Amino acid sequence: MSTDDAVLQLTTNITTYLANNEKVIGVFLDLQKAFDAVSIPILLKRLENMGIRGNKLLVPGLPI
Image (cartoon, rainbow, N blue to C red; front, side, top):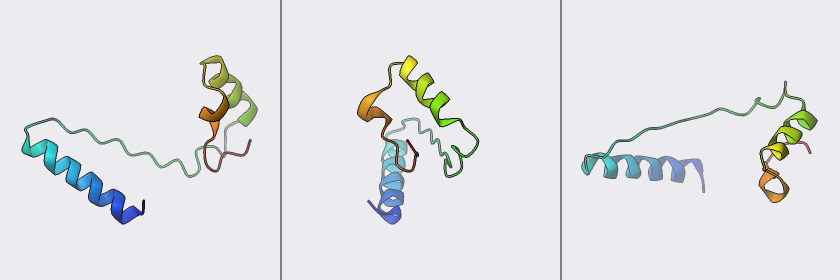
């Protein structure tokens, strides 16, 4: 999905929900540099302790 497609889908969803008098909340995160200051081994261990392991840990761009 391209950025244009994602924006169109988001706009369509928001419009639909608002037309039906439903609440809409948007959360946007910029994670581009999020892992620069994080110890990857510690992060992976903490995720594993929370039960997140295996294929669930395959995050694009995360150097494992």
